[in-house]
Length: 415
Image (cartoon, rainbow, N blue to C red; front, side):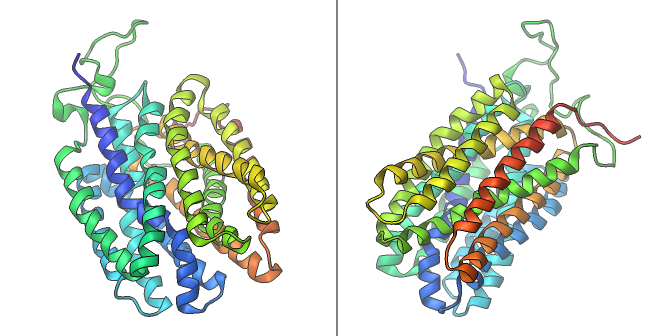
């Protein structure tokens, strides 16, 4: 039996996404080196990542419209090349403001076009019935990249310094992720003479339903406005970004403060990221069966456990709470993105999906900007992370409640 090419697309997206965003996801590992290099506060140093995520958010909106017009493949390829150049340029930075500009602004725009909006639009074109599973496979690239590049980053920083490590990562992205995208990615199943999910055009499903030959054909939103119910979900996405990236950016430095070595903290980061790979693969498929809101509620619960457990890790002897944190954070961090992406794609599917996902990307990017910044600010102000982590735990619960409420009412166009 021939394998549906959509699974090849999902697998290549996973691999190229891992290689491309792996260096960004390892920012937590670079943070101690940045603090030592620039002798700045955690708020100012964390702002590098916050600026990056702000540019990521705004860039995703603009590039989402280009994805609808030009197709995901071109946008992903150009942005992957730009990101590789950005990483090379990071090796030349000498001041924190230069890192703000290069890594923050240029890098944020570049990653916005090679990640969330483009890839999810691409995968949603190839899959309808198995969308959750396919997005679980493709988005497993994010924690996979974090796991691999987390260890590589600490090893590179220790031996070559953070500048040469970024240069090496830029060369890796240019030599691997870019050729993968150009060689295997196709914008739509029709380019291969196929239909979504591999069902031949016009063929009836088990229950007599005729599946469209394209996910853009005769379905989804085509109007110029914003569907009702869009903005509450926008708010839930802001909270999701806060929760996800506050812990991602600060966990390594938190564990170093608690008495762990930098390599041990980076290794725990990578272990949680490997767990996230498996969680992402499972969560997408589970959401296809139990529904996106239920799956996301379970993920919210895991985030609460992760934040509370991390707060209880006061020294390296707290092995039980450390194990709870690593497992819960890995499962939540891997499961959240594909479930939420499938939830959005289900509601917004249509020829303007890239544009609408780009708008939602602003929400996620704003949250991802605020999370690390708030965590750093609370640390500088209060001397610890307790208030910030409790706030994040409460935020993910609110996000889940909003998603559950929105799911009860399908989106409609105004008028």
